[in-house]
Image (cartoon, rainbow, N blue to C red):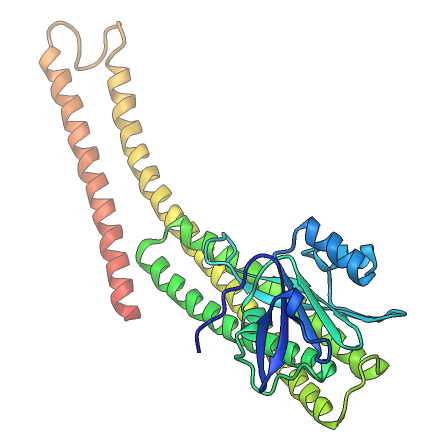
Length: 333
């Protein structure tokens, strides 16, 4: 089926033969339930929804707040819920993050509002979710939660593969860019962990408060969603611990390499200090042993000999250190 292109505006969907169909606002069928899909909303879109459907202004501001946590509330004329969804932004510094989507449930209308776009909402509008029915709004919400957990798990696997790739790249190059990439991955995992825990509290509140009237099938779906959500939380915690450990290991490797370089520079500086001391000594304008007008060449020979001996000692120490590290690497293999 050809993908439906969604503009950055408010879109209207109704269901025909089990499939969601995009409609113009002027051609809506009042006898059918309606899904109003608002993504990448502007202030004008917010004002339009507030006036047309009499939605609380502060609630709408919560929907577009990137840091708003999941929750569900029972208002006088509607039910309001906020769900945290995973988002993949390939051009962003932190590619994997989360965003809240707000849901307003009326008797025959459900409105979803999000300040950005994400794969979960795309899957809804492109009929990729089986068994999605606009005639049952509680089931519609559980399907969103279920799809969110599926995308969380998929993105976590991609993050794990990216972490392994960075580890290989770091072994070859040991550049700072790999550490920065791991830091961004750690941020993504923290975003996922916080959002998954927030969604878990939402699931518990849905089951405990009975704000949504769930039938037996919906309760079964809710059980599956809770299992997937816990699995995603455990994966996020494990990957976060692994990433933190990898970052510490890489930092230690960089520190050890720096210490080895400083050791070589220290040896070289000590050798050069001997040469510098001797040349400074013979640069004095007083009479010195093996110096003076009668022994000019003798002083030059002594200085040259000392420099040669110092260079030989320096080369010997560096070659010995190289052979020692080479032997240790062979033993490890």
